[in-house]
Length: 411
Ligand code: NAD
Ligand code: MG
Image (cartoon, rainbow, N blue to C red):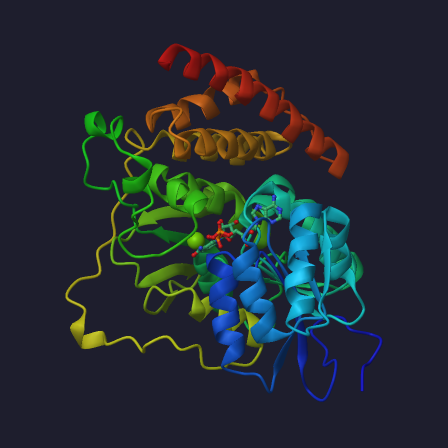
């Protein structure tokens, strides 16, 4: 029996949650389905979406039998629909942003996993938020662009937002009982946002210029998609996460300290006014924050091996190297300015990372491109979605012009 008020993680049918996974073929999407497959009595898949990976999406549809599948364009849509029909499956295949918004807002789904990479996830995430769903957010870029707006709209619709990014999920777990994302946490004096320092923590500044996309994507502790892997290598990931944390936990940037922790065992900490520091620990495997977010406020098994505390030789904590990783300073400045600054920074970063991954620019040019766009950007108050989208558009134009100049010179 289906209920028609599928909001806030309420049960849809006989105790099941009906899940939409935006970006199911990516690293987070695949890990989410791994956890879901362990608990088929609790979760059923309502919709799966991908941009271009048709074979992966086909395979996932065959296993999880969603009502809808959404793919990037019409040619792929026809292709996938044919493959599924030949298999005798009745999954309806759609394409485009409207379809992503539809499967995020549909009355027969109550839990949305936001795991598209980049600004492309913004509109479907907002559709889920506006429809009052339980929204599990891994896709940090929309929060960076307009976290205030997302949390404000969640309060209005009654949507429940659970952070899935491992650090923010850890912080969320260390918050007081009944804490909801977007509220100011009582008694909290500081957040200690940890990060491994990425694959180039021990490489000299001079050598950074010569690192390849392959080296940048080879993270020591985590296996992730290419964009976030490069973000980890420049440490822009920690910069994005700083802004993400400001919005999710309603704290000013100066209450959030970035701490390099090479072992990736402590996933972040929260300091309270009585001197207590609470931390969440675990093996570096995204299935832990994914399982926590899916089951919240309960707990379920995730498939992650338990932490063997006696095998840990050292837990080290260092200050980040701001000179070697200029993206941290750029992000801190954007967090100070807020308004449209984070959206512009995010847009410039997306284009610069793409250019680096395509072999068009050196690693060092990523931060130079963002820096250039930020000096050109005229920071405005970000009151509406339109203003954010306009800032995103202008920053993309500015980054494109700068990058064309750079690759023309390189060529
Ligand atoms: P990924 O590149 O592995 O997967 C991205 C997914 O988004 C794919 O399913 C892809 O088909 C889809 N997609 C890409 N562009 C799209 C577009 N234009 N329209 C619609 N769909 C599109 O990325 P990932 O590593 O899974 O990361 C996803 C998000 O989660 C990112 O925002 C990342 O920062 C965040 N995150 C990832 C991890 C991780 O361990 N991978 C950890 C924390 C946060
Ligand atoms: Mg993270």
